[in-house]
Length: 149
Image (tube, rainbow, N blue to C red):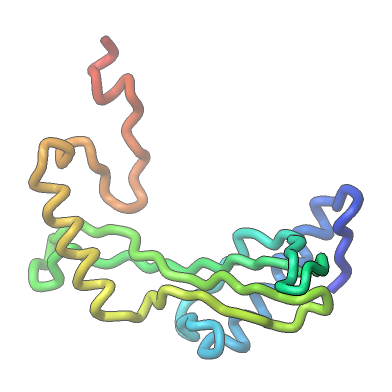
């Protein structure tokens, strides 16, 4: 993994790095709180500088990984609307890319999924409900919501 934290990086190098990080995360999915059954998307990888408790400046990186799956709001209804249930990890690395910390929300967490389903059901019963779109559909614009006025 070649990193250029000072100058500009080419699109090719960024794409290469994202693929390597996604592959590494997939191979170590359980350690990062990710599902081994879903694709892993590397959404960001940024250099950071932190100050240690002793006052020294240390350098490292923050990587964000995302997973998602389309699930029905009410799994007992065959034609239930669906939504995109997301999970992922934020990984804090030192200057040599050793993992220091991992923060995650599991996409396989059934309690989180039940809470999201409940929330989605409540939102769809409110005044905002008619303006929501199904997963995969084009989102409504302000113009469409206000009928072009």
